[in-house]
Amino acid sequence: MLTRLDLRASRPDRAALSGLLPRAAVDVAAALTAVEPIVVDVRHRGVDAIREATTRFDGVTRDDVRVDPAEITAALQALDPEVRTALEVAIERVRLVHTAQRRDDVTTHVVPGGTVTQRWVPVRRVGLYVPGGLAMYPSSVVMNVVPAQIAGVDAIAVASPPQKETGRPDARVLAACALLGVDEAYAVGGAQAIAMFAYGAGVCEPVDLVTGPGNVYVTAAKRMLRGVVGIDAEAGPTEIAILADDTADPVHVAADLISQAEHDPSAASVLVTCSAALANAVDSELARQVPVAKHAGRITTALTGPQSALVLVDDLDEGLDVVDAYAAEHLEIHTRDAASWASRVRNAGAVFVGAFSPVSLGDYCAGSNHVLPTGGCARHSGGLSVQTFVRGIQVISYDEGALREVARHVVTLAEVEDLPAHGQAVAARFRL
Image (cartoon, rainbow, N blue to C red; front, side, top):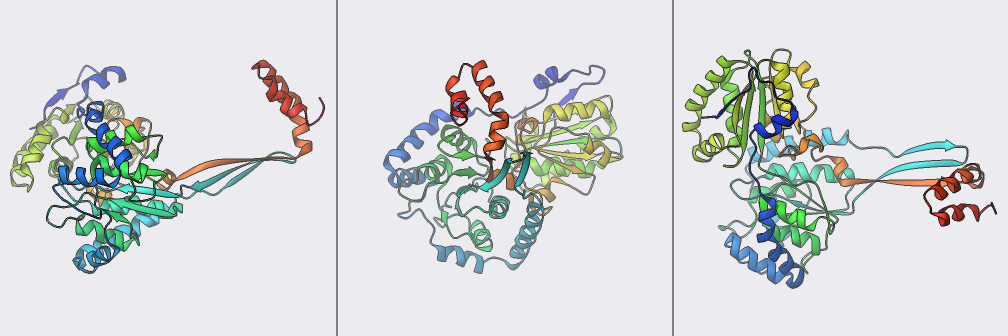
């Protein structure tokens, strides 16, 4: 089912690997062509444009795109108790992990009378996007809202596509909002939701930052509106890479590859192994497990697509080079001494160590965040965290003596850079 890429005896370097490894083909630039008129329309016509886009793309017509807070409360009251308990466990664990991410302000005493303080200040208002296409993601409400709340964000708004049956976002998404105390939710999806957050559109107060995953059109809208609002990242199709040796259980490996393929036909599942025997066993397991899966059609499309592969390497050192070059959103380590190999990983959104730390755990109840960099962006970016919602502000405080001590150096550097007024701004204080 998985295309094989045999790198044994070749050991390509990082540059060569970038061209060899599978990757989902996502053309955000092309999506911009479709998205631009929607965004411009929302900017100029506001809520009327949002309503028309919602009817066109979601098959739902609403007069008021904001969800009545009473509907949010009712969704929680109607929630299956088992689902509520699972969400509460997820919230508790995500809150525990993310609380530890908070930073304290730090003041450095550079010289007597001269200090620089790094303050960490939350953004005031954020818009959180929760997808609602092939699957519903109440867990994404948890992953976005909790770190924003811990960061100290004043106002949180959630947007998620309306469902044809009800005309509002999925009830479980609304119930998760209620559990977290969020009463501002909008039945708006796609590019029009991002435009609404950016411009307000006569519907809501514009936000300072938009976070949350979405399809290529949501990503294109984020790219177009970056600068009007802050964004967390440009999310692409989900992906899993697994680094495994001959100790890995093929049943576990196959199940984990399938679990990510289940998300979307464009999802990527990549196995990197130095064991041909394991590769063959995983192939057999995929042939057994995929046909009985609920979403067998989309799983098969994902696993057989050009974005997925089984990569054979000579040894784990080469395997580590491969997964670092791939920079997966999710990386599982199924090897002897898995913790040691995990500690050597440089590029991954999240690393899952050993047979009992599957990606599914991180998606829901590990306490980690499941909003992670995709498409190789883990080479330079990390996942959603408390830091996403804060900015560092430097506060400089020098008294007269501290400035006098360094004044001549400031003037010298200003002259070197041919910015004499910079130097004069200091010299004027001391008649230098």
